Length: 100
Length: 284
Image (tube, rainbow over all chains, first blue to last red; front, side, top):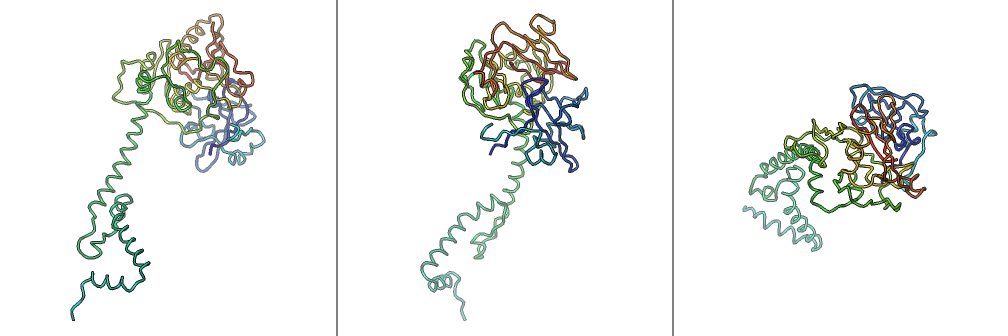
């Protein structure tokens, strides 16, 4: 069964990507951030007011907390439960598997 | 007092049991005889054979051990071979697809990119997209590794030259390397070879195949770097976003938003880079 697509809005940087919730699990802590699935721009939270810059030598977007790559095994797209845990449920749009 | 042979006593025991149950017991024994060696091999168990239980031979430990060793070896080599397969994936694609007829399926766009002829008629420029897979991929990124058997003299898609471990450089100096959710930037931009009509927002789709796409990107990048008319450049944090307008349509706007507008054709390309490393590119 395909997971629902959870996103905030279209990316203001590239226009084509969707700003989605990416979570990183480190030391049993769940850290969330907003990541564009096209241009890899990163924000700390769904307000998208604070953008996270990547280190000059980093090839991939990094978790704002642990610094690991957001494409590593520690990270994944958040599911609905994790979005609720982060307290961001009212900030996201959810496209069900049937619609999306 | 003479002891009866075991077989005789077994037969006498069966005679005392009702026929129905005797048949069932015989069936179970036959099934055990047939499957015991296979189960030992599959699961590494050490079920005794019927003969050993009867007392004629020892259980086959050697075969069980071999099965276990074979399993361990298979597990080790399967991981290596999976990595090696990913290594070769990018570079074998062009050879395979040069020989095969053109195909544009959702699966091929996801895992392989096509080296099509630039003169190929647009698949969806008329604004009638085929139904395709809905949401973006959610798989964990895989990172293809370098393979020692690569032939570095053959350019990828007849266009990109290999400059390092799984890194490719275009004639204009753009570098396509590992990264993104798909594991490699080439696979990432290959998402734009096909529409995703149910994807929220817009989704740019390039006309033609991967070769045409890379050529357009290179052409646009060269022009944008010179600041030619019809190009813009914007620095955004650690990324640079180029927008290039071409003379002819290079693709169309898909996704939900594009579908609502009947997939309008577009002449514009957006390219996002960090230094000379390509992050993404797509028509918009």
